[in-house]
Length: 395
Image 1: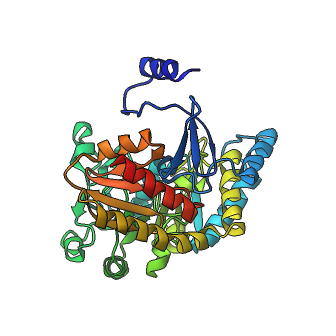
Image 2: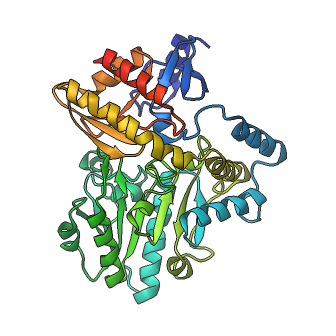
């Protein structure tokens, strides 16, 4: 199908909820994408931080083909081997206790909210518990996830949302403490805010939240959907801070392209929250998705992905800092690992994103003025150099 025909059919039959760029992806290889016209692009977006292993990894591809030949779906009324293996690897990598597999990050957030409220309900029998979330956060687009997303733009058309949500300022511990009441059952936050503009949590803030939760028997929920799975230089971003959540959500690179998410609970929360009948999913944890998860963990280990991220990050940061120094339209850089943002001033960030695409570079934006770079975790120094050259040409 030609590019123009695909775009025409898509606009005719798909609900217009995305302002898509005029490109039709046909295939990927390594850190590169190719459109339907054969043009090559360097990918520094990775399908919004999903394709951590790059495109076309042979071991990943063959594992999925093998699983398709065996069985794809069974439902959660029965056991399946890929699910058991994936659960073991995720639990061991996180040091948590139990996992529930979902189809997406949004569903993982929904499950985390339910687990927190059930924990509090079992503790005191009340049904009016509150959750503290962060302004500028993003946790998904279902009604529950929107309720803890601190952005009026996303929320306004869909109110009323679920009740009992209070908002505090990210990286401001006093702001969080001011929202705590006897009804508070959980505090939810991203370890590194993604859509809100690439804001890493400070050590003081995350340690303070953990201490506050321990003192008040409040559950700490960390959203690692975008910043987890090696992206910041640790398997999960919170591990670098020395804090540990009661509930963690993950998705995106967890399946490296296959739709899958999860919420993971520590022992205390797992033993005192959800029981049979409280939560479920038809497709979540299916053999195909879990084979992808299991294979991703194997490849992360064999390819030393996390170690590679630590090694390549200083080079990427140095290159980005050079662009900030050279161009007035960049006012600064922030981020961790291969989750980086350049603050744009004096021109629309969308203009730079569009120009970059024309120059064969895929980048995306965050918030209103941040150029977001979340490439596959396998990038090399030569890819960073090429990115910088294409980005300069796009300015």
